[in-house]
Length: 216
Image: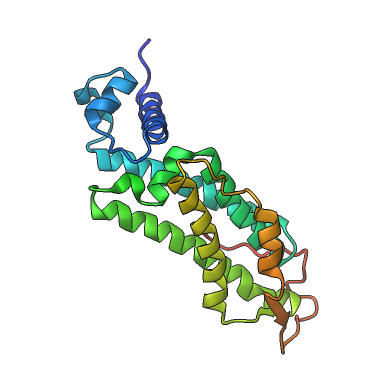
């Protein structure tokens, strides 16, 4: 029995991710992808109208994976520091396990592709940073803590550190795992990151342990 449409679409996306991993620095062609899947190029286009749509499918997978788990982290963890740590470990571990897809996040795999894809990736990172900013902002209300530098700069510091490790991973040909030594680096990042806020938590509201859920 031939694969159903959804199964074939999944097979195409998995093959694209595998090719991105196996051919770092190389541009993927639809002819090569069709050979990898074992179908004709015409068959590829029956499932995806363009290669851009294939890349968009992988970006959607990244978004769904990361932001669904971020909501779980926010509901489970008690403090801003733990929430930020788990969120960034999630991002770093995801990229480490999916090196081909990570080439999309760094833009390496998108050279020569439509600007819409670059914009979509930028929006993904902006959304992640916004989540970090929200967690750090809530620390003042929940824990009586605020960052020692302005909130936007504090969130960007964490985001830029993670992005730098992801870029090193791709640039090294996937030889420098983004999670390597992260725990000691995180400890250093958190040293002096927060200070006591002037305002204190409101008794009975949003205490550590009470989950605050918000959309990704």
